[in-house]
Image (tube, rainbow, N blue to C red; front, top):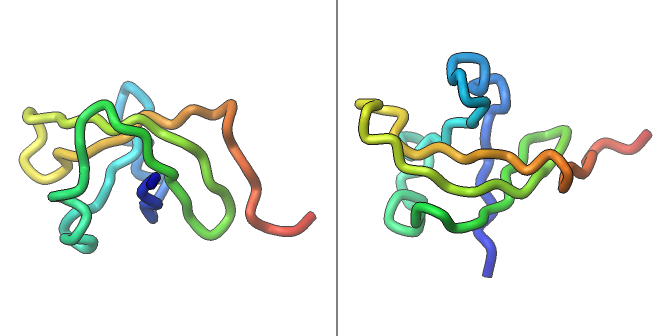
Length: 79
């Protein structure tokens, strides 16, 4: 079963590789379920997209990141 992860896509602004931060401080239950290389569904109020999970040990807080696959983008707001 694919994990759905609520994210803030604005966190991509600080990452030069265009990854989004998976906030395990707020969503502490996610950390033990995340596996580098696994696929998750990233979503916020407006859209969802599949992403590949990455672990970045160089970040003290923002360790869990996901690289969105924009070809899977789906708008959640009606037109």
